[in-house]
Amino acid sequence: MSHKLTVIGIGPGAYDMMTGQAVKALQECDVIVGYQVYTELVREYFPEKEYLTTPMRREEERCRLAFAEASKGKNTAMVCSGDAGVYGMAGLIWELSAEYPGVEIEIQPGITAACSGAACLGAPLIHDFAVISLSDLMTPWEKIKKRLHAAAEADFSIVLYNPSSHKRKDYLEKACEILLQSLPQETVCGTVENIGREGTKVCTCTLGELKTIQVNMFTTVFIGNGSTKLINGKMVTPRGYHLEENT
View (cartoon, rainbow, N blue to C red):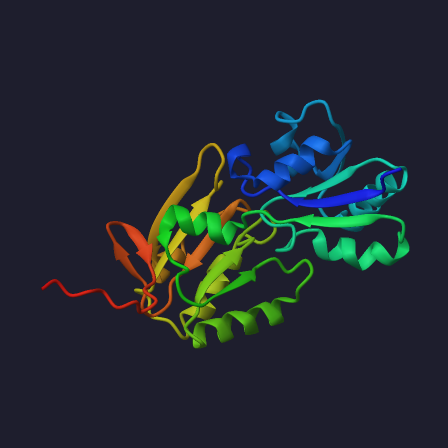
C-alpha cells in the first residue's frame, strides 16, 4: 500500500506555469490538500480528485490532515502557491515527519513569485537579491525592520512578499520609509499583482512613489539596487557582463 505525501509548488496559478513533474504528481494523486484559495487554482484541471482544505492560519492542521490521508494509503498531494519551499508547507511537513515514519515525502518545486514577477517586469534580479516577507504573523516586525535595513545597506535588489493585508494596510509604506534611510527616492521599483492569473497588473515606479501605491496580498514588490535602471519601460539590473563594442 502506498503511503506517499507529495508537497507541490503549483507556481503562480496558471496550468501552463506548473512544472511537468508537478502536473504528473497531481494526475497520480488520490486526494489534494491545501489552503482553499490554492486548491481552487487546480480544481478545474483535476476535477475528479478528492479535495480537503483548511482556512488561512491553520497550517499545522492542514499538514496533519495530509499526513492522515497518506497514512490511510492514499496518494496525497499538498499544494502550495509558488514554490513549496519558499514560504510554503515543505518546511512544516518535514518538521512533523518524525511523527509519521511510515509516510514517504516528496517535494516538487514550483516557480516562486520572485521569479515569475521578475519576468513580468523585465530583469530586476540578474544580480544578488534578497526576499523578505512583510507579514508579521510569524516574524516579529522588529526583525523584519532589521532585514530591510541590512538588505538596503548591502545594495541588494529586494523582493517583498505579503506587502499588505486588511490588518497591515500601511506596512509597505513603513517598509519604504526604512529603505529610504539608505536608498535614494529615485531607486527603480516595480509591482506585479495576480502574477500568472487573470487580471495581471504590472507597474514600475520610483521608491518615493512606491510609498503611496496601494497593493494587496496578491502583489509582489520589487526594489532595485543602485544599478537598476528602466530600459524600454522594463526594470533591468545589470550584472556587469561586458558588452562587445561595435567595431
